[in-house]
Image (cartoon, rainbow, N blue to C red; front, side, top):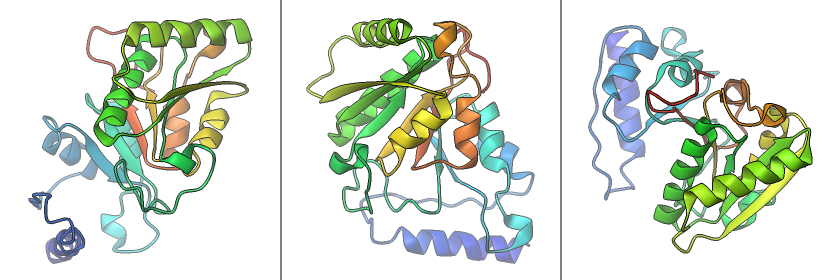
Length: 231
């Protein structure tokens, strides 16, 4: 298993070779994948994992590692599906869908503190990568959606030149966000909100999207002391 693990690391490093401006360091660690990854990424800006692999070595498959990391990480976790050929800043990937037409970052909000944290993180990524930002709110009561979007953007303040658009869509949050994020540069959600409008609650949306993300999915944990719980 150790030899197989080193082989996987070597392959990963070789695939990063074209991006010579990126400094790459590898670690081969023993232990359960989820806890090992969380410990290794404790002080990282983000922890990036894939979804369940269909090939490779069975004992090394990520399996439910992405779900574990999303549920337990204290920082941002980015889940990248096999179908994704791009990340923020990579405009050459295979894009499709409305949000992807201009490499947009899509963020879901529901009026909770968790979604506000996600919006702030998504805006920061949009500024860094010069990407448009699409703010999406799924609702059962349109008045709540309008209030949530208005309040969220007011709290963000200046958008530093980022092109921001909003969408309020009636429906179940996970399905609405899956459609909105199809082919997008990145889809960003917070962890489960305990505040905000009950008719807009994201609930376990982050966990539902983690199983089959439509594009790179960033799940942003609420800092300790916030009002959100694990998704």
